[in-house]
Length: 124
Image 1 (tube, rainbow, N blue to C red):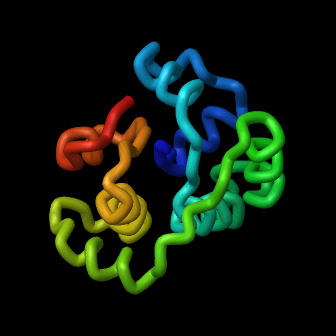
Image 2 (image 1 turned 135 degrees about the vertical axis):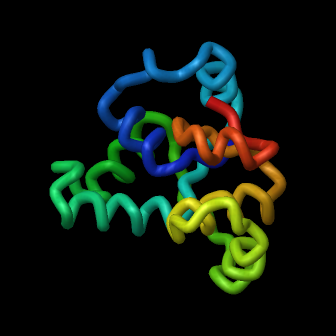
């Protein structure tokens, strides 16, 4: 199982897999792919401010159909408890997405350099 962050969900929806390393492509092919609930929430935010045109529901439905995407069910209280321990980012979306990877002890596929520099299980 691997977690993907918001940017990776957008890349996959846009079929922009060239932005991903060959290692990550193998991980995506060989694992169940999970989207954190906070990434789903961030997709809504990005849609509302005009950064992405597609709705989160359409992105998630497309990824469910194309790659079998599921959405994480980690309880919010666990995410907040873990996110409090991540002072290296002030972005609440990133904190809770990274917390989800840590709580589940699974890789997080991301394009975010700050996450890559600070989260041991992050990969690009």
